[in-house]
Length: 295
Picture 1: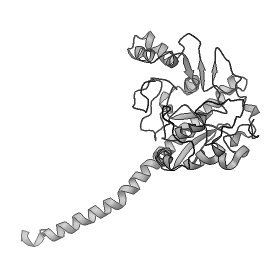
Picture 2: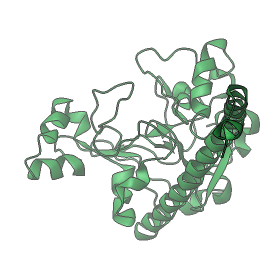
Picture 3: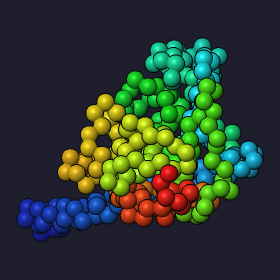
Picture 4: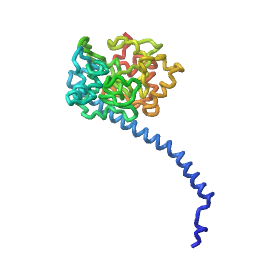
């Protein structure tokens, strides 16, 4: 057999390589989209499990929803800290060194763990820096180990309200929510409590929740965004300075976020809609648990 007649010429080899490169350029974005879609679906499944846990919690507490955080006056009550301390784990000392705010609180994910029993549920697939109970991933503020309990889901601050031993807050009663299928309780975020962009940049008081100095900025915690509390910036999502913030919010699932509603269901919504929904819908917004006007 004449090997010369059966061999590839250099030109033929270059043509084959070029074809492979073109096919790769066409297919790689498709593969990336498929990977993102798979993460989004997995995240939605996890969100549904959290929604069911919220429902079971309410069933066991006379219809009361949990606070997003309960704080003790003096005694460390964070279950992760207590577990690590009992085991002699050096991470307990790390948590304590960050200040009592990190160990005197118990957070909503820890209150729901008895119903979920799988802390991996609290790591959203679309959050590259996801951590649960002990902060072992880089975030904008690495000093607060465990503060917030996790960093993949945020609680609607108008629905899950903070409470403390010193100032107990009345919990939101599930049956008091006007439209459970149209009320957001939790959403994809990087901080444990969230709010939407406010109309005109002014704070709307709802469900008895009073103003905090940065509440008008809490929309920046949605998706993969992260509010730097030391330099919060402009609170208007339309401001040019927030272009990168909006891109980070949309980065969780390529423009989408998963939300958990008061009827225990989960739904994927456009990320920008989560930011603007209260601005656009007002009292009919899924952020508004009362479906009434600002107090």
